[in-house]
Length: 316
Image (tube, rainbow, N blue to C red; front, side, top):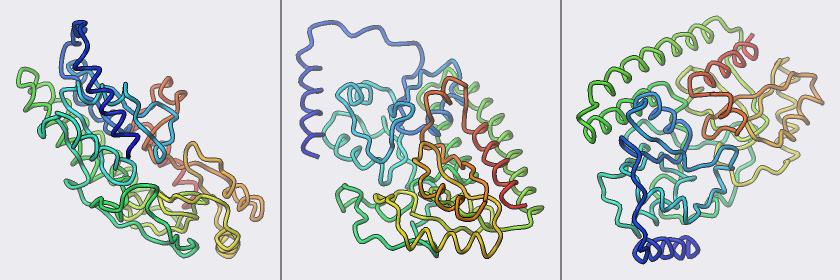
């Protein structure tokens, strides 16, 4: 945190001492977000009337992200800063306390949607150090931050973003509302596809040989799970007890698919599939995406559709 404070001081000093005029702002609201779902929701609702930037670079590891002076400058100069809150965003509290960002210029979502506490599944070995290198005074330390993987939460986040954009830019309020309604219908349709797939599936449990950022998804769909580590685990080293437990379960229940998450080493999943003959597949948490996925035009809906296809195979 001392490093962050020094960076903030540097940014503010550079701003104060700069004699050069600021470059002309792009037309429309300038919105900065910390994670991909928020970025994509703003894209969908704002369209060409909003300039949105993703602070987390494609392919970056969320849990070890440290903002640069350029990142902090973007936040300070934005019209609106959106962040989820939780483990990966704890640096933001210090930043907001140290800058001139007004309260109505930022919006956190974890205190506005339904949250779930992180938990241990059957095969997980309890961690004794769960602070992830952050301070212990954050209100959301014990809660899973991957809130967008519940369709109810995703739709609530879309509502909130749309309302904020309408409040800040009344000239384009009708366009924001129209895009919001269209996007919500798309999410409703996708949620029905998920519900139908779960209803028609032969199984109700998934196995993830990796971190498990899907608590909101499985709880909202009535699924159960077992996994190697919680979603924001600081420790992802191979644990013999965990791996044996997952292997035994896959064998005993003849589970056809073992999942890993995006941008993972996949080592634990590999160990499990090698021992069981199960198929390896990916579930995407959508917290961040790779450069290749960004270049290919992937978005929240397209990645959730891929997750649906993967779940259909695992549950049949």
